[in-house]
Amino acid sequence: MASPLLQLLALSVLLLLGPAAEAAGKGRRSQPYLSTTYYSKSCPKFEKIVQDTTTDKQISSPTTAAAALRLFFHDCFVGGCDASVLVSSTRFSKAERDADINLSLPGDGFDVVVRAKTALELNCPGVVSCADILAVATRNLVVMMGGPFYPVKLGRKDALASRAADVEGNLPRPTMPMSQIIQIFQSKGFSIQEMVALSGAHTIGFSHCKEFSSNLYNYSKTSESDPAYYPEFARSLRNACADYHRNPTLSVFNDVITPNKFDNVYYNNVKKGLGLMSSDHGLSSDPRTRGFVELYSRDQNAFFRAFASAMQKLSVYGVKTGRRGEIRHRCDALNF
Image (cartoon, rainbow, N blue to C red; front, side, top):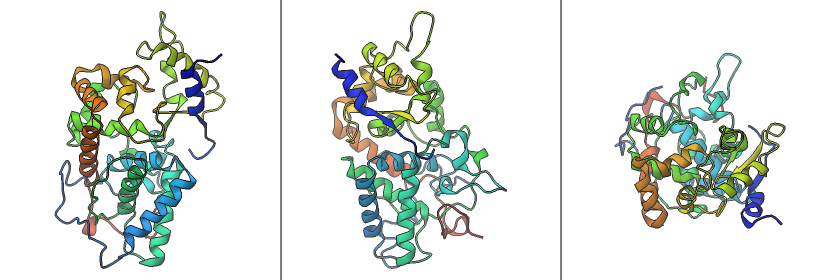
């Protein structure tokens, strides 16, 4: 009979067949030209329209929250929060979303922004940026999953360009050593504590088996899997991901204990060897990050405060205003 952990993991497996500039203001906590009331006169129904859209989308597609959160992070860390990751490639230009690391971004994140943009264009055409929609939609979805509320300042413009070549080196990969991940965050003005707090986004969402398969099979001459895994968890993962070569969409929840709730259980998981990625294990083992993992694992309020603060800071990273950006007609295409 399968163990409780194996049964739990089996429930967490998802078979998904769906789709695969300047940085001014770097590291600043606020921007004087942004305001939470930016659309109060030009588009007074902005908040309600985005809220209704995100609520409907999350109810119909429960993976939307994690998808939007990941999309937001991948957008902001490459040239700032300017919706450049939403732009589709053309025959003349390969856009950010087609960079290797972005090919696995879930389609639900893109779709929720497009839906909100369509509704807003009917209500107040040419007023609301895709960048602002993504920032507010992400916050709303975090709250829907039980996470903390944080204010989002508005007034971002959309990027005037999107280049796949700009992506490499700006986003951390789960296979990177912790020193390299820390360096990427610090290069953008984020502290180690903020990095650990933002990593808590892994409390929701899923990862494809191919992203961590190298830790599961033929890890070394003495160990089938990375010893950082709890042994029974490693066996469960090997069983769950056994067919990943033939089915590259095979995925597992990042948090196999409370996968549909934004909470601090992720930090307890990584302490126990129940994290999926090498970067998850690194948070618990590296002396620079271990203390914050301990803090957030025992105090959810501390995690929520830190996460909300870090997300506010992230949301104004490298934003564009004035002639440095535009209000896009469509979120997936630059204006011409």
